[in-house]
Length: 245
Length: 325
Image (tube, rainbow over all chains, first blue to last red):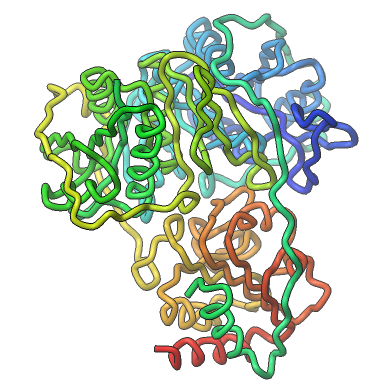
């Protein structure tokens, strides 16, 4: 079984978000980048399935050279090799084109990624890749098991879940509680240095969307405190002042 | 040319988020000088679909194929793509739901459309330029995005726009068939399992949310949260540490790596307000924080606060709600 796991390089979850002076780009200065937390579920589950039934796990990232530390981290966690498409990820469609091209070329059976990236929150790439390759997509998946070429997945729906069975090849976007994401151990870090990391150039059409401006949410006016002894007064304020109940 | 709105139904009713989407689509249609047609998916009744006229929908297409009752990605994509071609839709609007995101992304490739998800307000249309504002960085920021090309797909974030109701207006419901074949249902679910919802309110669609953190000290104390939620008609939620230790199911986890919500009222009980949690809730209209630590960072993001013990404050709030009647 050939697994392809797509990872994005995103600001750490504790990052305070700021933008460049023209508000057109995210300000990377002093920011720690990590593997997108949702992608960690995809990566760990692929490694677990490989360990159980054999196969290879390839990590794919669309990004410039500064994403390589996190690609090495994915290799240290247990992926076998990696591919970096040498381009800034311009929009979801552009990224999906790169993934589809790699998946087709390498004839991967299972293409996994996180539910969405925590920076652009597109939640789009999985479906685009599935459609480009004319294969099923299951998104967002909370559970993934493989038996031969047949996968059984739990897909989250609002208020519940669906059990879906698909044959390989397929795409799934992953989220908790699929597995407990692994962290690299010392041996993994040592072996990751010599694992193959191939850099390829991007393919495809022009992006279909363009960000013209970023902005921060409006600041709150300040908190109105109600003494704990008369906590019930809060309910009156919510009805008469805030008018939300 | 028209605007096509994807309306999700369950148990015969149109979902609240789809009423918002229907209103949104009708307003976009008015901007473009055309009308809005809806394509219904899920289990619907003709009478309920006709009421989409109140949101400004002119015509509703409905395929009564029974296998469309549950979500099937391939079949839904083909159904909506067929409707979009028939109606020559230039703009397709859907909810930023698990269904909307799954179908919207496939549709964008099939129909060669540009796609924006997580959209929070009406587009700005200026000649050929079409700009939408969407949430980014998991609730920590917004971005304005230009959608290029002849066809656009917009997935609207729940609770970020209001559903209009113009009483008495009715939409024409037309039967529609996309000639779906067995192969289109190859990825149909073999089983659908629904969870119990507190007071029957779904968290992603809820207008009122009561949420608990580690300050609740254990799952056995959640009745305090549930009692207030039931009295208010609110959904229940929790912080990440709480779902990590399985005090509450993960689908209640609100935050950067859980779900982001934008209810009218978010009441946080015993949650300190880590930056990852704030990201998931800061588009709530009114935030109430109850915490015994006056230095809890959440108070800075709150509209109302009570510095006190949740075990003492929550019963008082529940009693006060019941008094209001």
